[in-house]
Image 1: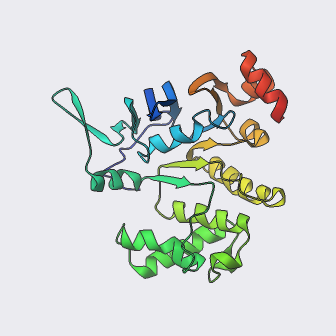
Image 2: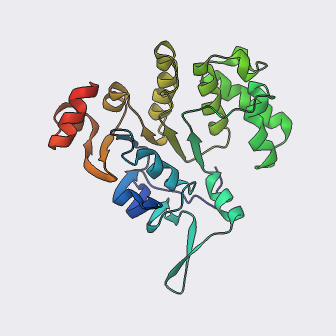
Length: 264
């Protein structure tokens, strides 16, 4: 973890604060005043139909998408902007990159470098970005591969791995940067059904270890059993937000009820 970017936080402190965030693509409004708080060690799941704004919101958390209005803070630090004379100014790209070091992100597609082995994919950023020695990075990468159940695949190239194995390598790669926050954007949606369980098991282990996570998912069982909170999004707003088990078992809003009736 990068100490100069992430201050020590007491248990149950706010890890992520999303405040009245708006985002449009051209004339299409995608996020319409979204507010949400994620606490340290919490697993927050975002559910809802395609096009509801879930992935866009996740991408705004690490400034892969720039907000049009509102603000997002991670551990009390504004994401992508800084204050000056009561105004917000966008950070320089290199400063945004520094912020992203503490935020791991796993995408729907694995985005592994095809010409690198699993081990080489994992050590690339720790060596090039964090400045770790290759020996230290390799030792840590092997530990991460063991955590995701792929100790025997260190020398395998992405084309030699199943989709589920590639996604687990992608998770190990994100963990190698020692993030304080993990973002998952529908990490199982591109997988064959029989491969989903292994990836969800790794995510469950991360949750049990106390990692703060925001997960966009269509896996209602995971959201119910592993999530602490669930936010149901539709039309660019959070329609319902609360305890994961309560929202999924007894949704209060008619739109949430209709959605869950179709996906359970």
